[in-house]
Every structure is written in C-alpha cells, then in structure tokens.
Amino acid sequence: MNKTVEQIMAAPVVTTTLDSTTGYVRELMERKQVSAIPIVELDGDNINLKGIVTTSDLRGIKDESTEVDIIMSRLIESVSRDTPIKTAAKKMLEHDMHHLVVMEEGKIVGIVSSMDFVRVVSELS
Image (tube, rainbow, N blue to C red; front, side, top):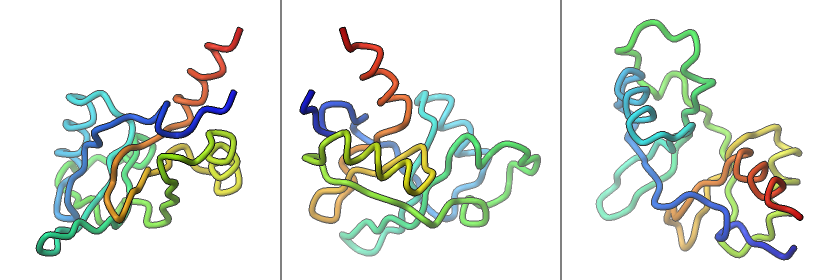
C-alpha cells in the first residue's frame, strides 16, 4: 500500500475568513458535510492559512455570533499531495490532530482527516 495523501484527501476545500461567526461556520459545516474548515486571510491575490475550526472546537459554544478567530486552532500542520499516507498518519499522531491541511505552492488543495485513514483501513483485504 503506497498511497499518497492526494488519493484520500477531500477536495476542493471549504474555507472561510477570520471574521466569520461560529454560527456561520456551524451552518457551513452542516451544509457541506465536513468536520473541519480552514480559516484564511485574504491578502490581495494571496490566501494565507491562519487556523482551522473543527466540530470539536464548536462544542459548547452557545453564542453563535462569536468570531472564529477566538476559537480556532492556530497550530496547523500541513502536508503535500505526494506525502505517503503513513507519513501523514504519523504526523497526526505526533501532533495529536485529526486533520491535516494539504498545501501545494502556498495554496490549500485538500484536507485529510482521521476518518479518511479509517476508510483506507476498512478497504484493506
């Protein structure tokens, strides 16, 4: 099994900006059926990754007008498309994370979650 992250990642990625509210992000997650949304900052033609909000981050948040900037995880790990899935899985374990952002030339091209790895294992014969 020599799969790469590109073979299991979700793409395209749903993103939102720092000024988004938790209510908006929760609704976006439900509508797009995703468990994490990278938070970006628009800087002219550049899109800078600033953090990530997961369903776990939203648990217990009652005020839907809270800006995601307050609750997002700023410690983000990323991998490239050609990263072997074993390497990506080790990175997730080392950093106790459930999501990795897939980056190529400074752009977000995908996201991989722990559930993607469960899916791979479930498909083993």
